[in-house]
Structures are given as C-alpha cells and as structure tokens.
Image 1: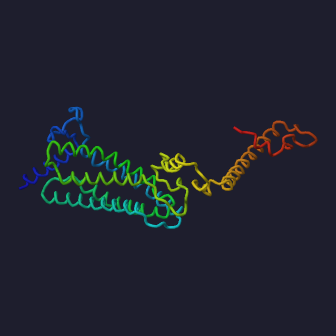
Image 2: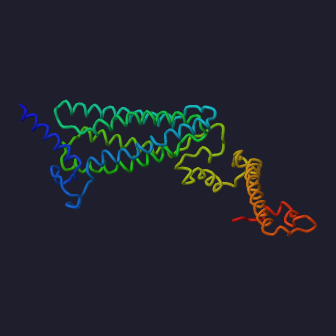
Image 3: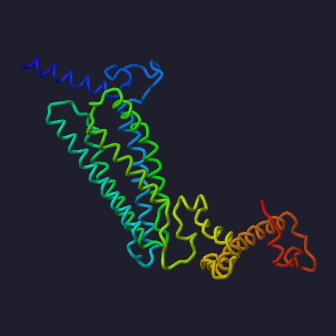
Length: 312
C-alpha cells in the first residue's frame, strides 16, 4: 500500500515537472529542448503563469493610483450610455468564464487527474481582476474622460501576452481534436471578449459637461487624433463656421495660462535673487573696497536684470 502511494506521488511530481518543459505540437507527448523543433512553443507553465501574471500585475500595481486619481478629479456623475453598458456586460461575461474555468479545474481534479496549481490560481486571480475592472469602469462615470489609458494598456498587454497560449491551443487541437476541448473553447471565447472590449475602448463617450471632443476622447483616439476626424470631414464638405468649432477648455484659456506662468515666474525670480545675493556676498568678501560713494555698483542695478541673468 505504501509503495503504491509512493509511486502515485512520484508520478504526480513527474507530471508537474513535465508541465514546465517544452511542449512540441508535432509530438504532444514529448518534452525536449526549445531548439529541437522548427515549430516551437513556449513552455506551458510560462504561457499560463508569467504571460498571465504580467498584465494582471500591471493592473493591480496601478489600480490604487487610478482610483485615487478618479476620486480627486471627480465631477458630476454622468448618465449611463450604451457603450458603458456594453463594456460592463462583456466584463461580466469574462467573470462568468473565469468561474467556468475554475469549475473545469475542480471537475478535472475530482477525476483523480494531476491538475497543476496554476489551474486554480489563474481563475481566482481573474475573478478578482474582473471585479476590479468593473469597479474602475463604473468609477469613470464621475470623470469627463470616460475611457482610461490605464485600462486600454491593460487590454492591449493582456491580448499580446495571450496570443502565445491562443496559438498553442489551436495547434494542439489541429493535431488532436480531443485535446482538452472544453478548456480550449473557454479560452477562445475569453480571448475574443478581450479583443471586443479593446475595440469598444477605442470609441469615445461624450460628456454633457464638455463639448470639446479632445477632453472626452478615448486613449486610442487621443494617440491617433481620430477625435478630430469629424471636424476634418465637415471642413472638407463645407467651409467651417464658429458653430462648427468648440470653445477651448478653461485650463487652456489665457487667464489660466498667465496665472500659471506668473506663479512659476515668481518662483524662478526668487531663486535668481537668492543666487544673485550669494554671488554679491562672495564678491564683496573678495573685494571689500569695490564700491562707489558707499554704494555697491551691483546693488544699483535694476531687478529686471535678474530675469536676463543666468546662473550655473
């Protein structure tokens, strides 16, 4: 009995060790070097651990800063839009898929098969992550810009990292149609939903408090300047009038810019005065008699010279 349990334990450990070795699509049962085959895949454990945890780690590391930024810059709560509902529904489906993935792992475990620990950890991590994404997308309703560059980068990173596992599963199914079909189908739907969310994130949600399209543009729209396309098309069809353009934001108006300029200019002038006074003290110590009628020549200079003087 003891020998039987020991053999079972050794077999289990052997399967876990092989899980992190190279997997060849041509020979599914063979684990060898990455250089042995012209068509190579990354090790399964690398695809299902590192490439999964990189986007999740990016999301969780920046989540506190993102939520704090939303809280500090929140405005009036906006109304629910179709785009907002679509993104929330898709993330809800991703939450359900993570639960199905966890159920599949539990079912496989009850069948006395060796299930790597990552089969449990990844669905649990995704369950918590999708709840966080739902919370972040909901909190953006208090912002003028509904889309977050932070979430857009997360979707892009997740899709890029998931490409390796996606092609591995496809090639495995082409070689063996019965190779873990349920898990593969769940992952294909999961991957497609992520692409769909990224596509929806490219569209901008309008805000009633701002008519300037640049302030409500999504991250992808901002970096490609596609928010300006409608104005260009309108100008191509007919001459633009004042009604066709929008007012600039208060932050870009002259009053706001001048006040900011004066604030920083005053700080720089204070630094220049202190540096100028230190230089004058050093000169007076070196040449104590360098004065005209009891008045230092440098002290009679106008303060305007401070603006033109640069110090090392």
